[in-house]
Image 1 (tube, rainbow, N blue to C red):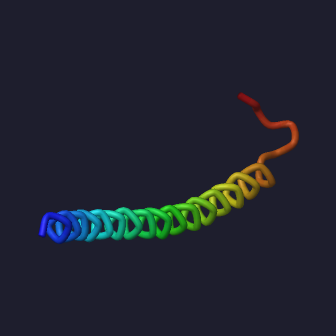
Image 2 (cartoon, rainbow, N blue to C red):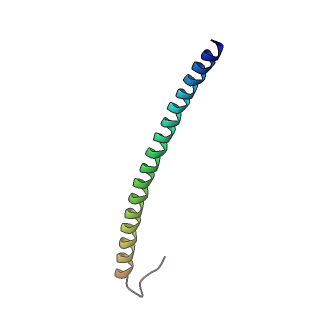
Image 3 (cartoon, one colour):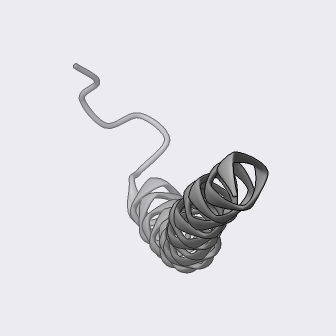
Length: 67
């Protein structure tokens, strides 16, 4: 009987740990997805800014004032 109680107790503990690990894995996947989205947005924004700077630099007269 004591063995069955211990077995049941540890079975419950294992189930709780599995549930917590599932939550951690879900959080990791969500964080990874959001980081990927942020990375893509950042690359797009940097590319856009780079094009704007290049356009402005090409419009600047060669002898114009520099800061």
